[in-house]
Length: 85
Image 1 (cartoon, helix red, strand yellow):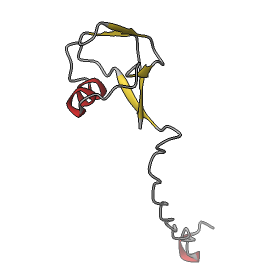
Image 2 (image 1 turned 45 degrees about the horizontal axis):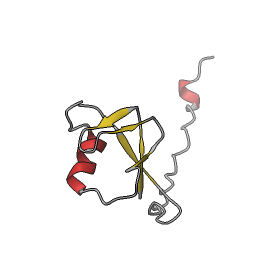
Image 3 (image 1 turned 45 degrees about the vertical axis):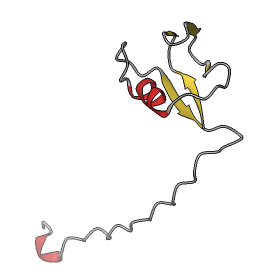
């Protein structure tokens, strides 16, 4: 999984300026899971979601299970006794 910036911001840990759409981290270094969670969930000094997880060619997102199809019951027809004459 990779991460993409959702807005422009400056990383206070290394003073790097990110633009919207930039890959995070810019140099491919390892980032602690706690830091990724802070940036992804808005639990940072800015209080904003700054990165978003995206699928990469190296590690595609896991496939989702197909949804079950639910059949709807056919609509009931009004009986003859309830029809207006």
